[in-house]
Structure formats: structure tokens, C-alpha cells
Image 1 (cartoon, rainbow, N blue to C red):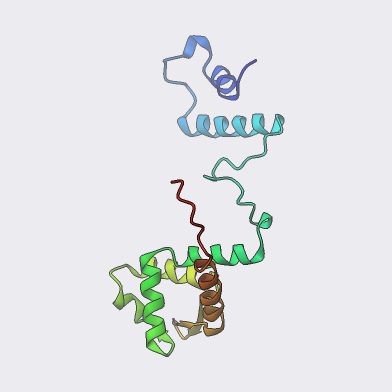
Image 2 (spheres, rainbow, N blue to C red):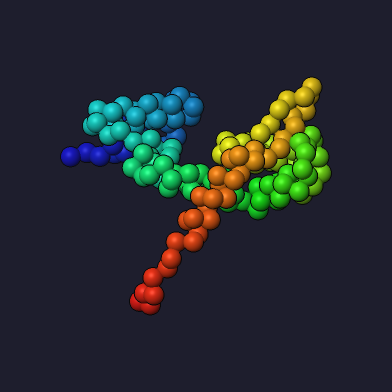
Length: 162
């Protein structure tokens, strides 16, 4: 039985052309190869997103609480996001544009980190003219503190096997 790669290779590089430069322009050849691989995978009922590193996360298989812990932990999993949260918590007001000055990062990188924190619900952003003002969503921050504290305070067994 022929595998997907050898099928595509044999179709586009016949025996008399192996090792030679193909006559088709490289872009057309690449597009045809991609199309053929997808077609073969679909024909064989293989349904995987090849671009994803770890596949489907299956978050629905876990409790709402576990998903929230993971969501908050992911949002806080970068030192820049920790620095942003610390700055916003200490500011006691909405911050407009000053965040970039507080970090050794570019505007676009800071914006990406702010988006992650906003997606997790930890901060709010309001557009004022051409700038966006950010502040901590205190209600969500308290939820995050409670959920993370409960998780971190789970008693550890005295198991000394490792």
C-alpha cells in the first residue's frame, strides 16, 4: 500500500524526473502538493489540523473550576503580564498609554500581552480617543485570587516515592 507522501511524490516526480528540477514553477508545484496531501487525508477520513502542535485541547472534559484555573494561570504565565498586572494594581486608576514606558518591550508586544490579560477577564480596556485605557477588573481579579489560592492550598500527601 502506498503512503500519502510517496503517492504525491510519484505523481509529481515520475521516475525519469527524480533528481531533476521539475518543469512546473515551484509555486504551482507546492500548491498542487499541498492540495494533494489534503485530498488524500480527506479521502482516508483523517481529520486532523496539521498546523496545531498539540491537537484539540478537549477542555470540555474538565470541570469549569479547572478550566478557570488554567485560564488564569495561562494569562499570568509570562513575566511581562505579571509586570503589567502589578503596575495596574498599584496604579489605582485606569492607565492610558503609560504601560509601554514601564516595560522593556515594544508597543506591539505589550498590546499582545494586554490582549491575553483582557481575554482572561483580568483587565478591562476602554477606548478614549486614539488610546485605550486599561484597569484591573477587580471583580474578576478577586475571583482569580480565590480560585488560584484554593488550588495552591490543596494539601499534598506525604507520599515520598519520588
